Length: 68
Image (cartoon, rainbow, N blue to C red; front, side, top):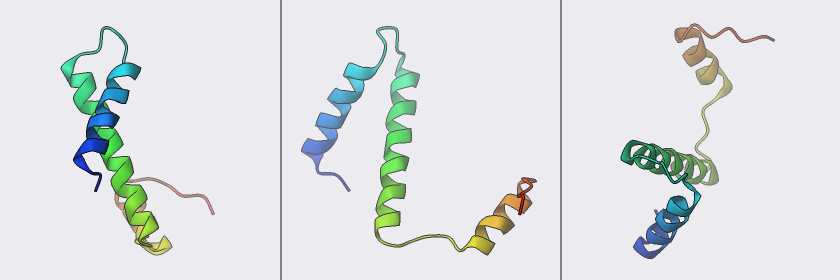
């Protein structure tokens, strides 16, 4: 997890990158996406990967066809 100071810096950077007509919904979405990406990267760094069969089973449940 990021330190509070790092989060504030990231939020300032996010604000600088958003268009002038950004809405609160845009801000919340971008912050959520970035948080999820960071969480995924942290999991990957810890070696927490799904096995190939788990991924295939999940895709199958969602109706996603996987080519061999």
